[in-house]
Length: 254
Image: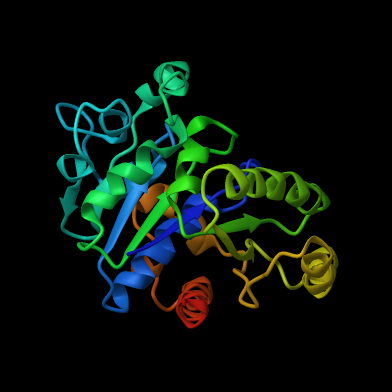
């Protein structure tokens, strides 16, 4: 079972959209995928149309009220998900006080190791215990960024968090790559950022995906249609971007 976390402390970089579409793309390749929504905003949960009332969620998993298998919901269209929960915000400090609090999710996932090919984790854009749990439980992480200076500047800070987790909690964690999203190839700044990405990645010693995701209205439609663009608009240019990205991810897998 391969566990991949999507993380970036900067919001609005296409993190959730990318996680959802890559999960859908992996399923289209015949992989059995579990999606875990560790964002209290639970946008991914809403796209999956998963329930949180009177159901176990990631909140119950993290507070040890249930095992992760108990919290998995099987949805007809998109597959399996452990739903997010706004209550996560209420128990941050309670969880942090637990012994080995950064390893809670990792221990839970070990109990379903033979069930899925991939686990995709969508995280909150912060440096909370939930992000640390996601990274500690993961084999690799993907860092979506926009083509702007703030995103590029934030990469060094993002790597400090990842390196800290590698040193103290998960020595096997690797960065799968920087993923450039919402790229407008007609925009000179975006084109410049694309051209400079190999140099930026080399300077920070981070791999990057050669596939980038173009800016498109179809990607925004996920907020209204509640369906990954990969499924809702299979012929859109951005869908082809995600299909190519899934191919690149699979090619890089050990």
